Length: 347
Image (cartoon, rainbow, N blue to C red; front, side, top):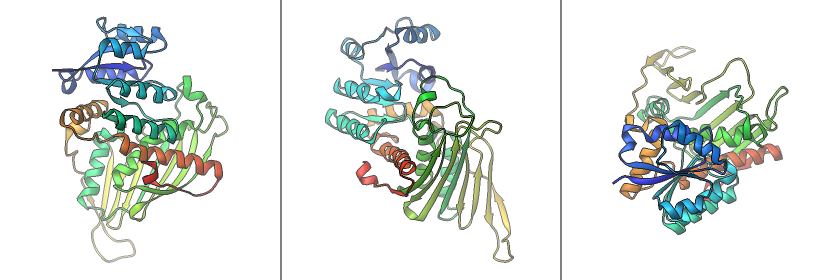
């Protein structure tokens, strides 16, 4: 029997979720039974766009939860509403899958985890970029041992993004709204956890954002891994991929990934010479295509966790560690010093 779900937040991102729910991997497992948004017109537009007239739209989340009794809430609301939406939904016995960021403060993130624990329900975050073919291929390469034990990960994100709306006036917009993807990916790829960060945040001349559209950060990870991040959401003229451009270094070689479809993997192939001879190696395919389809894969994994009584890959317990990287970077930028990251305290 299909599980009933309601979607909260009917802005620009909502269409991506509705399309995902119509994919073959999901459509026979979950049905959308309600739309909620404080702007009723936005919910009505979404209902009209996808011709789902049978799906009621409203502004009262608590009332819709009472009337429809769904098992799942997909939370696509603006970040400032995250805590209220999630606590209300968990309190009504629903499992919740939220858009990122998990919360707008670490205190709120801990409150969400506590609420999920009290309710005995699952809470996870849609880190959809962890579920794409490219990153799964990079992870498979690292796990193959071709590079040896990875010791450094370097990442560039430069995109001139003109959103309009809440992001234009959001504090720490790059770090809080976008860098979380890259920070989470660095944890996922390295298999290590953050220990400390030094970060410099800025809003370059000519930026159309009110605050913090650029940042440079150096993270220390367990396992003696260094992760560096250079990013800007107000860099015109040479956009990187939305998934950033990566250089992953180990003692046996280096993997370059443009964040899309181009990979270059060179490994050492000899012991002589000032520059050691190199051999080009093909990057292996993604080991499981079901884990490489963005939002569809995130929701698929979440449903599988509900069905099988396991923890989703991007559970709140895991994702709060990526969020800790964000807020520690923000703290470092404000204090202009290195900031330790206690992942045990974060969790």
